[in-house]
Length: 416
Ligand SMILES: [Zn+2]
Image (cartoon, rainbow, N blue to C red; front, side, top):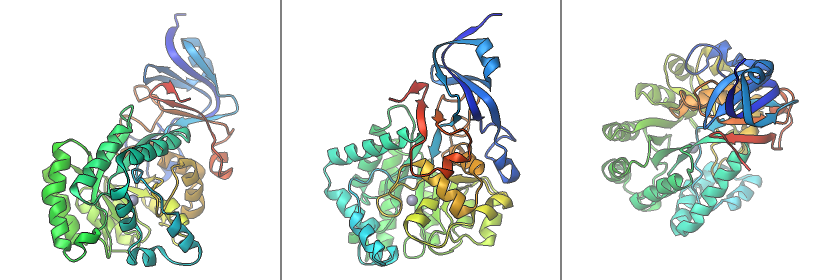
């Protein structure tokens, strides 16, 4: 029998999670718990593409390989997709963390000039080289924990030059086309515009969005639609400008108060509605009946010490397309580790381990518009693969706080 030669064979996985089963598109309802698992599974890779997925015996018979990885006793899964981060921030906020440990709330700290505005002041006074180094190191840590595709938002510049710089840096740390960029000029009203909100919204619409679009610096436009941040009306205005300049929408919605953000995301045809801690029943129904992905960020509830998590279990059961993200940022979720989020999603959202995994691979890929390219182990897709040193999917979130990614394959290349 003729054998084909490939670059890489991953063999003998005790469980190979393909995340490729079920109907096309993101997985919903009961399909989320059946994403496809091959026992004693294998993957063949040529260049940066997956060429075959199946049983080890079958792939061993079909292919010879320049390099083999024996995944005996391991779970093999698609590289994680992190569809919501703010990882270009420059400097951290451990000072606020200590205040929160002593009982101050995030809202109190933000009202006193901390929070996003504190990050913005720090961002503006940090040398560019230092921000690049921080962003590169954070991206690198995400990768060694298994995140092969990552969304990165601007939102700490909060003026035209700063927002463009953040998006340029997000492009600089992207060595293989795996960083998806989102413009978030409407993250907060900066200090100098506190007395003229309308003026700031005009700046976002008339100067920032055209500049971002003209330079091709982002795929998406996001708005922090929330009480005390940007209203529904302001969000609509910004979304109209984004649409006119060819940017697709995402929304920070229903995070701290239920204000109908999920319904607005659906109305605007947003690719995703993110956070959703305070989503209403109407919001759940709206998302379930739409193509808008519900990106849940349970690490944020955890890190802010909140009792409230998004109603993840109900959302899955209602048919919403649920994805997970780290929300990596220096204020409310200081981690780039996707495995941490699996653990918190199981405990805080009531997801099964396998559901959390499918939500942070396949569904997360749809949340950044890359569902046809990454997030599954299937022929033709990008060869982004994680070999995890656990024998069963459930051990991944269960044995928490350590890095289980023993091998990460990124665009067909094994990460050192
Ligand atoms: Zn965010």
